[in-house]
Image (cartoon, rainbow, N blue to C red; front, side, top):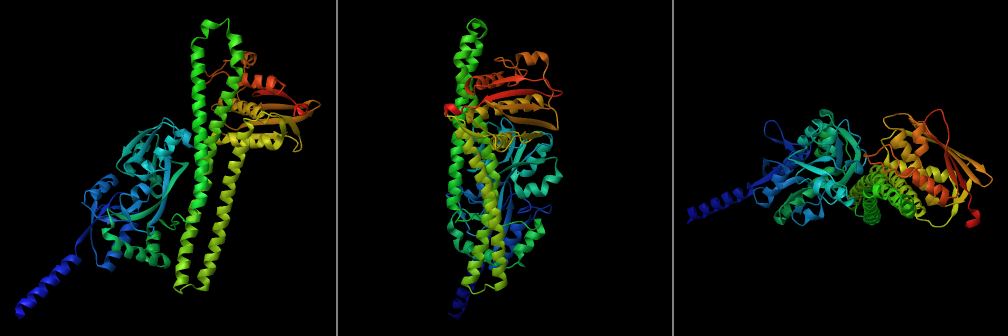
Length: 563
């Protein structure tokens, strides 16, 4: 009997030991330095350091297996692996997988391009070949490159790769025009390839450890406690590994208290997107009408003058809608940078606050730690307010111009401030152009006129200088000199571009005359300027002789009596 009891105890002990040593299969995909397979076929990286240390403390038996990110997701769903570290959170993924709570890392997407490219904004990616990683959240996520481009109705060709190294190689070989990788990979590898970082950033994400379901819920809870303890200790493995792999990076999570602000900004972005889509729709409609009209134009020479007269107002409105549409796209891209900085700073402040709160509850909060916390809060709030103010200024600027573009009533225009505001808004579309402006105008000079029509004239003149006068040139300059006239104001507009031939000077205000036939030029820009000035603003425009570039003398009547 005694032998039987001993045997049963040994069996139970063996079963318990076997259960304790049961393997947990961890999927590793190439995302250095966070996690990857080294030359010896072993798992390595920041997340691997943390998992190995955690496994020792919890007596876990981890086994690493390797493959692409797409393969790891498939293996997890088929039960071939148990965990995947370093997965970006999204609501769609949250419905399919089980996430640990504590954030491992914060990251976002970064667009790179070829060395000879001039990609500076989302619209520059239209009809380009963009390299993406299969199953990457910066590709197919809600705020990834695919959905962001689709929201603006921007068409592009997406070339899928298994890993980020292949994307950078394809950019270097000019196989693709641009590629999307996460910011850490780009920061550490851009010097190894012939690639250029663009100003385009998108899709801030939190990175976690995931399993297929909540079967590892208790283990994940222990892992959360383990991470929080490491983050609280500046000399812990967590901070030492960060320094080891890529120096002092800001590790943060998306703050809960920022929700209302993000909802407001998201709503604003939605309105901007709707405005862009509506403007593009209107432009497409008008463009189709103009194309159809041009097809029959040669057979209708006798009726040409009468038809142009009838469609004059329609062309003016089409130009306004096109201007507003491109302005919206420019403002939407510009506002992305201060919002992204605000999210990152706010995330960092939330993480600091969480740590201080936990230390306070546990009676571990020292005076020096609290003073350091207050100092970081002060610095973060200043940075956050600066970026929110920048975003607010962009929105206010856009709102004023958008309202003016459809204003049917005359109003008092402070010429210097309003002109500088128009220039600033317009140049969001031409960031990569080397253009400087000189506005010589008394700050107190006012005129009563149609603000929308004035902005339309200025917009067409500047775009004409950039596209025609400054083509393949540098050190470009546009000068505007305002002076008061008994009946209004006189504006001398001139640039230092290539200038105009005598033939072009004679025909510049004629409809459908363009030097860019077949390259997108419609020949309507200066014709619209002429008609808006003469008919809407009750003034006139003439070409003036100058030593270089193009020069226009514009008289705008003060319409104070019509207000």
